[in-house]
Image 1 (cartoon, rainbow, N blue to C red):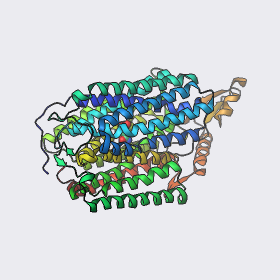
Image 2: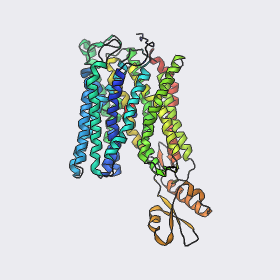
Image 3: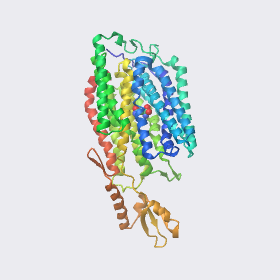
Image 4: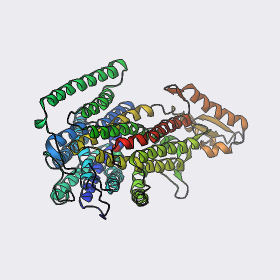
Length: 586
Ligand code: GLN
């Protein structure tokens, strides 16, 4: 098959802006709820940190697992449009149940049941929504259209516009310091979802068309619209193929059960982790053994799988943003701005990524277009390898920032901001490009299901990210210097809580202990006492990850440099081979 080249067309079809708006509101809803969710569990339902952390990790993992169901149903029975509408409505019910949970937060039993039911609806609804909206973007273009990468980057701006405004709006209504107000944040998320689905419902028939005017995302029939291939539907399958279909179900079902057993019973992985990890292997195995696939199609699907595997390491390191990097922002970053005499709240750092995507995505579109005109645009696997490299680079920068730093001392927020901006560049090379690549490589009749496989790497990564963030070096007992007015202003080092309790007495003052006060201390004995004290605390709690010793922040950040760096280099060397396996698709 020779892909039809269509480079002449300028601008983008209107359908992309409809998908932009729908996805923007859905992500508004998702990220708005996500910004409040942990706080709600901690401050309204009074769960402890480790329990709420587990629920949070399982939720963000499962949300990206159910696209397997949604993708399968859409490709076989419902088509994208119906799946998107059903998914959005199911998620709106989920948000509404969270709103109700928030209304009953004082009756913890009822509130908890409502909360878990709400999460169930959100997890299921996302499965119908996410892979289907993502796979529709590419269907607006002909198979070989070079605008696909930029189309996905525009779509990705929709994702991030939603995720940027969500914490601000839902946080404004929900995160007021009064536990009774969380419900308003959840209600805002519910309304956002309803706005998205309404826009989609009204404009879908008008704008969701192929360049030839054929409707896209409708109930699948036997015609592969984009590629003019005839689908070998199950009715047309020969007896032999039907038998091999049944055989596949048995083989991959057994693989799934064995893997689950190994993970859950032998390796003692938690239940959700075991389900996610085992399905991440078994589901793709089942898809690629489908008897209707041709050799070329199978080879292209392998490319999706191989890259999705490397992408796990990207998201596992990237998703530290919500976990260990948030602890870092809270405990080790100087968030005070002298000029305005203000301290930036920790949660604001979460917006740096989404904001940078909105700013830089158009520049990346321009960059790819320019390189393309000169015939120098890198192919997808190379772009993804660059993405992983940039991820490693971001961690290298921050590792440099904390190297040799006395623990407990705070560093400038520029380190964290630099990391987030570099990670954004990496994300722009990897994530929208990945969606576009999956769309180009997947046979249309498996478009949404393979998009779901792509999101499986996020499911696995989100779960893995939680495990990795557990290696964050133990928080240090906070220290403070006490300046005694009586004894010639002499300084003593004390645990902060204790120091604060003695402040009021006899003119002693507590000096917040940070990098600056540390460098001002002249007393050498006191200085070395502080250093020793803090170093001892760290040395007492070293952790090892696969033989790698993590005794301080530098070691911790370098773990991600090695992980993402190694993935980047291996993918780079595999790229040429992968390109061949793509059979003419760039
Ligand atoms: N932030 C993006 C989104 O929410 C990417 C998610 C992912 O693939 N991990 O769509």
